[in-house]
Length: 166
Image (cartoon, rainbow, N blue to C red; front, top):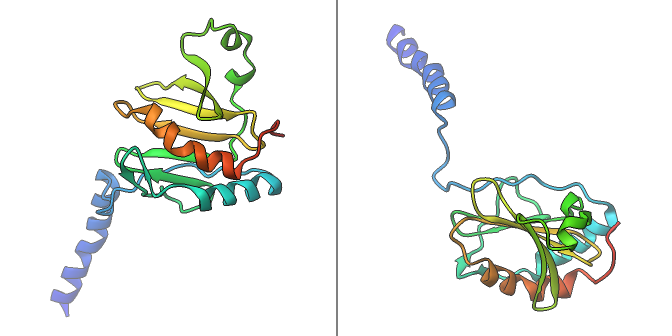
């Protein structure tokens, strides 16, 4: 009986060790905060989720945790899409519209307008403009962001109509 108790006593220590050093599952899934949009926007986002491609920039779809129809991901390091995000402050910044902000640029790809922002630590964040829902795409450093936006444009155009988001 003492031998049995001795073997079990190591389990709490193992759990503590995993918590301290960050043991994780073997799939190394990315994580993304799930937005909290209005009901109308959430419906558009669910439609977008159904229209998204299985590959982006040649990378297979690997959705982030927690699972949600409002988020999607591809590859590792992950390209992450979040639908129903808040309007980014830079979207209404006059310096961006004038082309005077070196870290944010407005532009379009295949009929979808985007705000591009440099991210701290590398990579870019793109947010749709002139659509009824804001769709944010984060692209890790070293990834061809133009290919990502080209691959996502048809789905965004199909699922998220043009207009001004609430």
